[in-house]
Length: 254
Image (cartoon, rainbow, N blue to C red):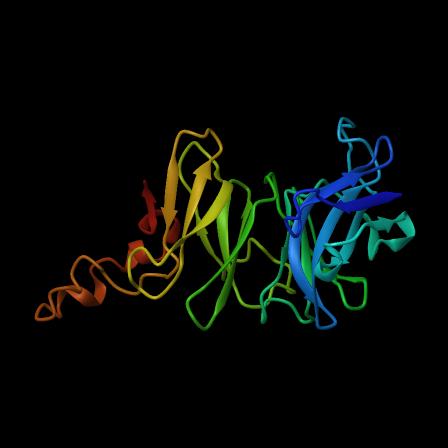
Protein backbone atom coordinates (compact mmCIF):
# COMPACT_ATOMS: atom_id res chain seq x y z
CA UNK A 1 0.00 0.00 0.00
CA UNK A 2 1.19 3.53 -0.76
CA UNK A 3 0.21 6.32 1.63
CA UNK A 4 0.40 9.97 0.55
CA UNK A 5 0.16 12.30 3.53
CA UNK A 6 0.07 16.13 3.55
CA UNK A 7 3.24 17.84 4.78
CA UNK A 8 3.31 19.49 8.19
CA UNK A 9 4.21 22.90 6.71
CA UNK A 10 0.89 23.06 4.89
CA UNK A 11 2.35 23.56 1.41
CA UNK A 12 -0.25 22.23 -1.01
CA UNK A 13 1.02 19.38 -3.13
CA UNK A 14 3.97 18.45 -0.91
CA UNK A 15 3.41 14.87 0.16
CA UNK A 16 5.25 12.35 2.25
CA UNK A 17 5.23 9.00 0.48
CA UNK A 18 5.31 5.75 2.40
CA UNK A 19 5.73 2.72 0.19
CA UNK A 20 6.22 -0.98 0.94
CA UNK A 21 9.78 -2.26 1.06
CA UNK A 22 11.19 -2.74 -2.40
CA UNK A 23 8.54 -0.75 -4.27
CA UNK A 24 9.31 2.49 -6.06
CA UNK A 25 6.55 5.10 -5.99
CA UNK A 26 6.68 8.54 -7.59
CA UNK A 27 9.51 7.81 -10.03
CA UNK A 28 7.91 10.42 -12.35
CA UNK A 29 5.04 12.89 -11.95
CA UNK A 30 2.90 14.87 -14.38
CA UNK A 31 -0.08 17.19 -13.79
CA UNK A 32 -2.98 16.04 -15.93
CA UNK A 33 -6.73 16.59 -16.03
CA UNK A 34 -8.94 13.55 -16.44
CA UNK A 35 -12.73 13.47 -16.59
CA UNK A 36 -12.70 17.23 -16.00
CA UNK A 37 -10.78 17.00 -12.71
CA UNK A 38 -7.26 18.32 -12.19
CA UNK A 39 -4.81 15.84 -10.73
CA UNK A 40 -1.37 14.33 -10.97
CA UNK A 41 -0.33 11.15 -12.73
CA UNK A 42 2.20 9.16 -10.72
CA UNK A 43 4.54 6.55 -12.18
CA UNK A 44 5.56 3.62 -9.99
CA UNK A 45 7.46 0.34 -10.20
CA UNK A 46 6.65 -2.84 -8.34
CA UNK A 47 10.36 -3.71 -8.09
CA UNK A 48 13.32 -2.21 -6.25
CA UNK A 49 15.17 0.66 -7.89
CA UNK A 50 18.43 -1.19 -7.24
CA UNK A 51 17.15 -3.99 -9.46
CA UNK A 52 18.81 -3.77 -12.89
CA UNK A 53 15.41 -4.57 -14.37
CA UNK A 54 13.41 -2.06 -12.30
CA UNK A 55 10.07 -1.41 -14.00
CA UNK A 56 11.04 -4.04 -16.55
CA UNK A 57 7.46 -5.25 -16.79
CA UNK A 58 5.75 -4.02 -13.63
CA UNK A 59 5.39 -0.29 -14.27
CA UNK A 60 2.22 1.32 -12.92
CA UNK A 61 0.38 4.62 -13.32
CA UNK A 62 -1.73 6.07 -10.51
CA UNK A 63 -3.79 9.24 -10.55
CA UNK A 64 -4.59 11.44 -7.55
CA UNK A 65 -6.91 14.45 -7.57
CA UNK A 66 -5.29 17.72 -6.49
CA UNK A 67 -8.29 18.26 -4.24
CA UNK A 68 -6.85 15.48 -2.06
CA UNK A 69 -3.67 17.41 -1.28
CA UNK A 70 -4.98 18.33 2.17
CA UNK A 71 -5.72 14.77 3.26
CA UNK A 72 -3.98 11.44 3.53
CA UNK A 73 -4.52 9.15 0.56
CA UNK A 74 -3.88 5.41 0.66
CA UNK A 75 -3.39 3.52 -2.57
CA UNK A 76 -3.21 -0.20 -3.12
CA UNK A 77 -1.86 -1.80 -6.27
CA UNK A 78 -5.47 -2.39 -7.31
CA UNK A 79 -5.88 1.42 -7.49
CA UNK A 80 -3.43 1.70 -10.39
CA UNK A 81 -5.04 3.00 -13.57
CA UNK A 82 -2.63 0.87 -15.61
CA UNK A 83 -0.02 -1.72 -14.77
CA UNK A 84 2.33 -4.11 -16.51
CA UNK A 85 4.13 -1.23 -18.26
CA UNK A 86 7.65 -1.87 -19.57
CA UNK A 87 10.82 0.12 -19.05
CA UNK A 88 11.94 2.53 -16.33
CA UNK A 89 10.48 5.91 -17.34
CA UNK A 90 12.79 8.85 -17.96
CA UNK A 91 9.57 10.81 -17.43
CA UNK A 92 5.83 10.77 -18.07
CA UNK A 93 4.21 13.44 -20.24
CA UNK A 94 0.66 14.63 -20.80
CA UNK A 95 0.36 14.88 -24.59
CA UNK A 96 -0.86 18.00 -26.36
CA UNK A 97 -4.03 18.06 -28.44
CA UNK A 98 -3.56 16.81 -32.03
CA UNK A 99 -0.62 14.59 -31.05
CA UNK A 100 -2.80 11.71 -29.82
CA UNK A 101 -6.16 10.36 -31.08
CA UNK A 102 -7.53 10.38 -27.53
CA UNK A 103 -7.16 12.87 -24.67
CA UNK A 104 -6.08 12.92 -21.95
CA UNK A 105 -3.12 10.81 -23.04
CA UNK A 106 0.00 10.11 -21.04
CA UNK A 107 3.33 9.11 -22.57
CA UNK A 108 5.31 6.57 -20.54
CA UNK A 109 8.75 7.57 -21.83
CA UNK A 110 11.27 4.82 -21.17
CA UNK A 111 14.42 4.15 -23.22
CA UNK A 112 13.41 2.22 -26.34
CA UNK A 113 9.98 1.54 -24.80
CA UNK A 114 7.46 4.38 -25.12
CA UNK A 115 3.78 3.76 -24.59
CA UNK A 116 0.89 6.21 -25.01
CA UNK A 117 -1.87 5.62 -22.48
CA UNK A 118 -5.54 6.63 -22.53
CA UNK A 119 -6.17 7.83 -18.96
CA UNK A 120 -9.96 8.22 -19.17
CA UNK A 121 -10.37 4.62 -20.33
CA UNK A 122 -7.29 3.28 -18.48
CA UNK A 123 -6.01 1.55 -21.60
CA UNK A 124 -2.89 1.58 -23.78
CA UNK A 125 -3.31 3.37 -27.12
CA UNK A 126 -0.11 2.76 -29.09
CA UNK A 127 3.64 2.47 -28.71
CA UNK A 128 6.63 4.28 -30.21
CA UNK A 129 9.90 2.53 -31.04
CA UNK A 130 13.21 4.30 -30.49
CA UNK A 131 16.79 3.01 -30.56
CA UNK A 132 19.59 3.59 -28.03
CA UNK A 133 17.98 6.60 -26.34
CA UNK A 134 17.63 7.91 -22.79
CA UNK A 135 13.87 8.31 -23.01
CA UNK A 136 14.07 12.13 -23.24
CA UNK A 137 10.94 13.68 -24.75
CA UNK A 138 9.65 17.21 -25.34
CA UNK A 139 6.70 18.92 -26.98
CA UNK A 140 6.74 22.42 -28.51
CA UNK A 141 4.55 24.50 -30.83
CA UNK A 142 4.76 27.16 -33.52
CA UNK A 143 1.52 28.66 -32.21
CA UNK A 144 -0.70 26.39 -34.30
CA UNK A 145 1.05 23.08 -34.90
CA UNK A 146 2.37 20.92 -32.03
CA UNK A 147 5.73 19.18 -32.42
CA UNK A 148 7.11 16.21 -30.48
CA UNK A 149 10.86 15.76 -30.03
CA UNK A 150 12.46 12.44 -29.20
CA UNK A 151 15.76 10.67 -29.65
CA UNK A 152 16.61 7.59 -31.69
CA UNK A 153 19.87 6.24 -33.12
CA UNK A 154 21.87 9.18 -31.78
CA UNK A 155 19.73 11.83 -33.51
CA UNK A 156 16.97 14.12 -32.28
CA UNK A 157 13.76 13.74 -34.30
CA UNK A 158 11.03 16.37 -34.65
CA UNK A 159 7.59 14.91 -35.38
CA UNK A 160 4.72 17.13 -36.47
CA UNK A 161 1.21 16.51 -35.13
CA UNK A 162 -0.20 13.03 -34.55
CA UNK A 163 2.20 10.48 -33.05
CA UNK A 164 0.01 7.43 -33.58
CA UNK A 165 1.76 6.38 -36.80
CA UNK A 166 4.58 5.31 -34.48
CA UNK A 167 7.40 5.79 -37.00
CA UNK A 168 9.91 8.02 -35.22
CA UNK A 169 12.68 7.65 -37.82
CA UNK A 170 10.42 8.33 -40.80
CA UNK A 171 12.05 10.18 -43.68
CA UNK A 172 9.26 12.76 -43.40
CA UNK A 173 10.42 13.78 -39.92
CA UNK A 174 13.18 16.33 -39.41
CA UNK A 175 16.31 15.03 -37.70
CA UNK A 176 19.33 16.64 -36.08
CA UNK A 177 22.69 14.92 -35.72
CA UNK A 178 26.34 15.75 -35.04
CA UNK A 179 29.45 13.78 -35.92
CA UNK A 180 31.01 11.43 -33.37
CA UNK A 181 28.42 12.10 -30.65
CA UNK A 182 24.77 11.54 -29.79
CA UNK A 183 22.27 14.33 -29.31
CA UNK A 184 19.33 14.31 -26.92
CA UNK A 185 20.73 13.22 -23.55
CA UNK A 186 18.26 15.80 -22.21
CA UNK A 187 16.10 18.41 -23.94
CA UNK A 188 14.41 21.64 -22.91
CA UNK A 189 12.40 24.35 -24.64
CA UNK A 190 14.45 27.47 -25.38
CA UNK A 191 11.49 29.62 -26.41
CA UNK A 192 11.55 31.39 -29.77
CA UNK A 193 15.16 32.54 -29.67
CA UNK A 194 15.50 33.32 -33.37
CA UNK A 195 12.13 35.06 -33.73
CA UNK A 196 10.76 32.82 -36.49
CA UNK A 197 7.54 31.93 -34.66
CA UNK A 198 8.61 28.43 -33.54
CA UNK A 199 9.86 27.24 -30.17
CA UNK A 200 13.51 26.23 -30.35
CA UNK A 201 15.06 23.40 -28.36
CA UNK A 202 18.19 23.06 -26.24
CA UNK A 203 19.73 19.58 -26.37
CA UNK A 204 22.72 18.20 -24.53
CA UNK A 205 25.08 15.70 -26.14
CA UNK A 206 25.79 12.27 -24.71
CA UNK A 207 29.32 13.22 -23.68
CA UNK A 208 27.99 16.18 -21.70
CA UNK A 209 30.53 18.52 -23.29
CA UNK A 210 28.17 20.59 -25.41
CA UNK A 211 24.72 22.15 -25.40
CA UNK A 212 23.15 22.52 -28.83
CA UNK A 213 20.39 24.84 -30.06
CA UNK A 214 17.97 23.15 -32.47
CA UNK A 215 15.79 25.35 -34.67
CA UNK A 216 12.07 24.73 -34.29
CA UNK A 217 11.27 25.79 -37.87
CA UNK A 218 12.66 24.32 -41.04
CA UNK A 219 14.56 26.73 -43.27
CA UNK A 220 12.95 27.17 -46.69
CA UNK A 221 15.61 29.30 -48.36
CA UNK A 222 19.12 30.63 -47.98
CA UNK A 223 18.71 32.62 -44.76
CA UNK A 224 22.02 34.31 -45.36
CA UNK A 225 20.63 36.02 -48.48
CA UNK A 226 16.97 36.63 -47.64
CA UNK A 227 17.82 39.82 -45.77
CA UNK A 228 18.85 41.30 -49.13
CA UNK A 229 15.38 41.71 -50.66
CA UNK A 230 16.83 43.15 -53.85
CA UNK A 231 19.01 40.10 -54.55
CA UNK A 232 16.31 37.71 -55.75
CA UNK A 233 18.81 35.70 -57.75
CA UNK A 234 20.54 34.46 -54.62
CA UNK A 235 17.45 33.38 -52.70
CA UNK A 236 16.24 30.78 -55.23
CA UNK A 237 18.62 27.89 -55.62
CA UNK A 238 22.03 28.67 -54.13
CA UNK A 239 21.78 26.39 -51.08
CA UNK A 240 19.00 23.90 -51.77
CA UNK A 241 21.38 21.07 -51.05
CA UNK A 242 21.89 22.38 -47.52
CA UNK A 243 18.28 22.98 -46.65
CA UNK A 244 17.52 19.28 -46.84
CA UNK A 245 20.20 18.55 -44.26
CA UNK A 246 18.30 19.95 -41.36
CA UNK A 247 20.53 18.25 -38.85
CA UNK A 248 23.42 20.46 -39.96
CA UNK A 249 21.87 23.73 -41.01
CA UNK A 250 19.74 24.22 -37.91
CA UNK A 251 22.04 22.97 -35.17
CA UNK A 252 24.15 25.50 -33.28
CA UNK A 253 26.67 24.78 -30.56
CA UNK A 254 25.75 27.12 -27.70
